[in-house]
Figure 1 (spheres, rainbow over the protein chains, first blue to last red):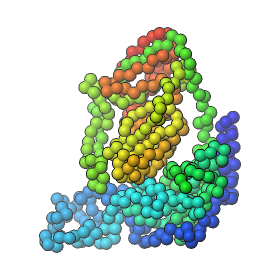
Figure 2: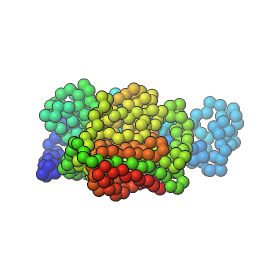
Figure 3: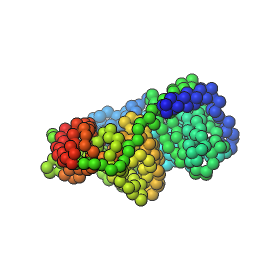
Figure 4: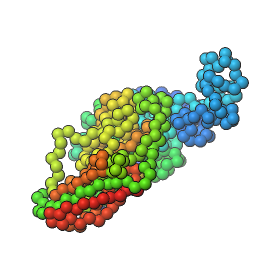
Length: 226
Length: 241
């Protein structure tokens, strides 16, 4: 019987969602724009739309004997202070983003993957279970829920390849939960949906994000205090 | 179009999650047990103990320590396996639950390890604490399904996670792939965690035939039939491979 009730609730919820009556991107006002600058460079790096390398190779777990664009022989025994064909003086002050014989594009994606694990916009920051992307969920009463997607290097990327919905869960059990589907806003820099005016005080958000290449959405829990 | 497809796919999955029959399960009834018996014994490991290699990213070494390799199981000198959960499956009536402790169960992130590594709790809240000055992203799973996924970016951060279902839950950190812990959400009070020598004991078991489950995170769970006689004392040696 309970199962039947659950199924009924599910069907009702699905119908509402399918009709899109509670999907909302109305909070798309200038004041709610996080002014995120999307760059082509970020899309070229791991987690971006145009990344052409092997996933999982950017910095995390990267070894000195596996560097893009360099032959294995050249890498053998190589140290940062001993590079074949380079004078010691030339090595002084050398940075990881300026390496001889390597194209700039090949270097992109090597700089600081998973080095930054802090929120950039005052929200709750997660590393995605795919170990590539990062996400940040930001909630405010006026702007609703905004979701920023980042590449492996914690640089914002276009959200158009991603899907997401949230479940607002009030503490008060007499207030119903609410589902909201997030829509792209601010030129693809965020996925966004309105707040729920019926929810007062602290509440939980279950965020479901669909990442490219994954059949199932990943769930994230966020506690909202405002 | 891609966005629309993702949304439609997620709606279907959301519906399936809501329609789950998990609520249909009957509740355990606790009370006095007449002529209860004991199941006791030890869990031992046969074969070569598997090892785990952990590669720590350079940026986290000051907190997490250096690369390491160690045994995946806690095996003692006499082959006894510690930190194994032993429980009776599908037992609906028996001794009452032990009184709930004043503070609820806790899972800590300490130097990029979970503490405790194995614990048994009742359905409800689990407090997850970050003792490290780096982001931990504690992600609980029942099998492949997410139970909760919490970000703990600051040292000292404390979040209450919900374990709404009974069963074996695996804890991972999405920011540190090697971190693992296991939380068994008990359905009844007949459970034990083996000590360092692999020993366990279940008391006040009503006479009857049961299935005993022996679960360790790195190995496949073992199920075995067990018969408890009135005031009996069943002694078992369970082999894990």
